[in-house]
Image 1 (spheres, rainbow, N blue to C red):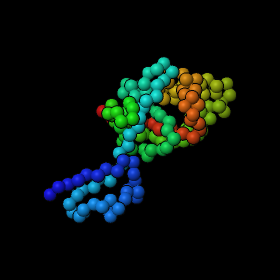
Image 2: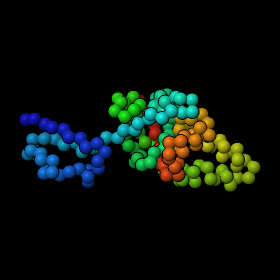
Image 3: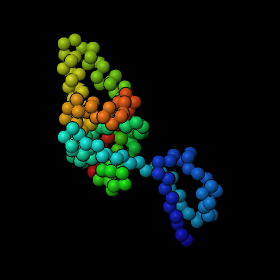
Image 4: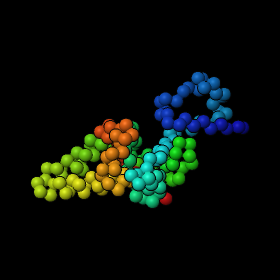
Length: 162
């Protein structure tokens, strides 16, 4: 008996075409995997030219902003470029909109009187470093330089798998 394996990259099970539309043979003669395989490509560089994927590998980049959300617990491949072999795997630990992140992490600090400014700067620098940048200015400048409105992104926290 011959088994075929068909993987539908990025399709949810509700979007997978029917057996008839694929013109597949008898269902007893093949195996169809319907899992979703996720990939994240990290080709960007920080303000000093260090590739993001290297920072993921060394653990200094633990967050990214993307235009589409991912479910917490999603396992994904970290790739240094489109079509390149994965350098490691990671799992999503958090996923919120940029606005939700700001409201939870930064906005409460703005309401504090004298300590608010310093605490806000510390929180923003911490986030810039989690994104793989050395400065808040370098982090915030990256988005408009690439035509992305940061307010339309999702903050995705992740952890590499060993």
